[in-house]
Length: 152
Image (cartoon, rainbow, N blue to C red):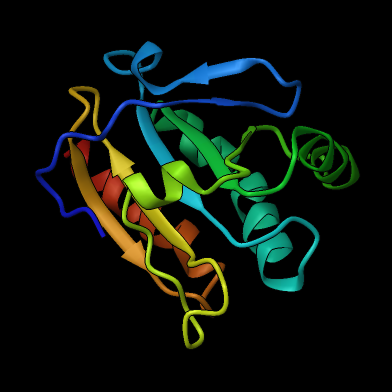
């Protein structure tokens, strides 16, 4: 995993509308919660996404942008967003290029894509990381706590 203090690598990926989304366009405007997850519509990933959704007011107060990344296609992301009413962007990393760039470790004996969350400050520096495959909802509480510490 990339470590706190590291400059977040810039990248461009298609969002759920197949529109290019570039990280550097948001640096300087918001803190960014960049979370990598294994797959849309699986129990853990759905719980994580819905927990982010349910805490959007708190993220908004902290001026943080939530962005999820998996290998699912834009069409799969669009369906996932519509089904669960997700109010944030999901990016499609079908070749896992950005997952590798961000050094997201695989889990469960290397069989599943990992679940890792990065907090990126307005200067584009990673300030916090959290990696845990099974504690999906904890990614949200970790992100909120890290953001609150940035604002103290």
